[in-house]
Length: 220
Image (cartoon, rainbow, N blue to C red):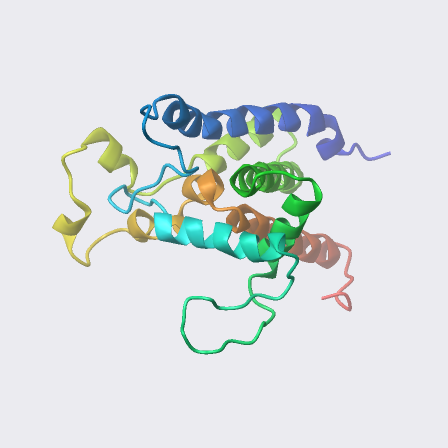
């Protein structure tokens, strides 16, 4: 009987996932604890001046979409215009999260992060499944998961050299510096649907590989 490498590595992958998610929580815990007395921590620790960072405007728009779900809506309505807007099937991911937040009676921002870390967990377990197809060593399965989750392009230069300005380089700049989706780390950090979408793409790719190996091309 062929050994199922993923089943063998599942526990270690799960432990690594919890460790990675714990690391992702650190900036938010620090921000919450360091919030001055007369201020309120609003849930996100992001800045457009930080390399690869997601704009606060984007992040709060996700909470606004969840708010519509919290009100009992599934279809999204554009409320950022004076023109009449009919509900439409957009941003269903977030309206469903809003409905779930209402069902469990959980604060929207808190539920957003719960959902985000669940999506991160799904992605990391998916990476474990995917990597187990190529690596027979438990060590390399875990190492590659860690490398993928903390991958960056040139963004690390802005950490090593805080004086650098993104605008100094004009258009000659690595995409991961200005587009968070280009970096796995910023994708799993605070944007809920990024790890969810990556998980779906990874699953589809894995199914294609498995079926092509078994000559099940009709499935494709």
